[in-house]
Length: 157
Length: 157
DNA sequence: GTCAGTACGTTCCATTAAAGAACTCATGAT
DNA sequence: ATCATGAGTTCTTTAATGGAACGTACTGAC
Image 1 (cartoon, protein in one colour):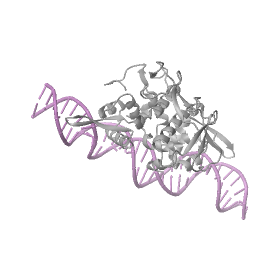
Image 2 (cartoon, helix red, strand yellow):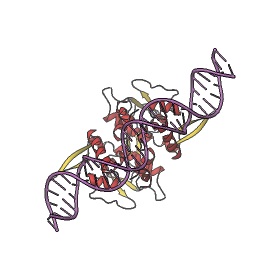
Image 3 (cartoon, chains in turn red, purple, brown, orange):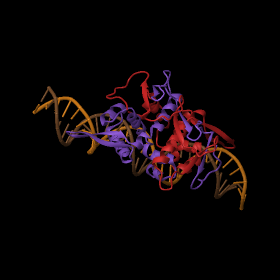
Image 4 (tube, helix red, strand yellow):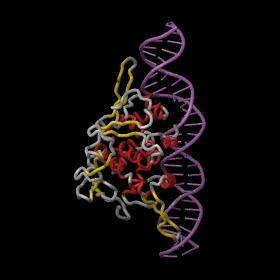
């Protein structure tokens, strides 16, 4: 299957990944959340090629995740900022961070603390059910297909 | 920069992506959470090439995300199951699903409902602060670097 | 006025990874 | 014997990436 067919699949994970699922995009978005906005700054920090960066930014702007805004008009120059759609990826980035903190840290431990402004604590992010506020885990959840059951040999865990 | 240098970066997002950040891996893991365990079943459902699937599964087993277990010994055959480390990626998959549901759905809406067994509701996953239980958003959080400040031109939002 | 610096890209080519299809290997069923 | 099953491997073609240089449009220093 081609990558570009992903967006048409009836699966939100596939559709999300059709925009942010390649090798560099989530790192670009991580830097966006850290306040990076400019081409050269992304390129220096990430060490990816300018060619690839250029294409990724175009894709993200096209998908409405980033906005390309002129910040000066000598030679007009542009910066990239998260849109509401992009800001809403915070959960994804935070979840990746928490998993990396837990399972991929070296002896020094996690590289950064996430501080919750509202309560002042160093926070551990947690995914909960919006209805009952209890944690959602693989075991405490199940899925229900809304259109058609996919071809399945056995029930999901 | 080469992809394989990512794991050494002092960033949990980068380290996570060094394992799960390529085009297919998160879709494989999505299927794992749906109960898929066997090579041919992954291949049929995802439509990726057997070659790539083979390499991805090896990587995931090598990283401790999946376990390769013999399930019969006529010709010995193996299935792939999530380890605790893999099960802990639930948050990431759930966050991707929620974002796709909200921003990438077509007219029919989200393809599946996530049911929380504990409360019986169709649940909307939410990332909250484990300390105070309030939602974590881009604006309500900030980061603090534990080792060294990276070269930064401006403060993070 | 020319030369270096800044900043956002584009172009070119060699290397690497992915797509697609066929093939292997062990075994059990027909 | 022949076919089917399941987990891969081995090709060859096509697409994406890495690396480095170039383009463009200004600003300020000499």
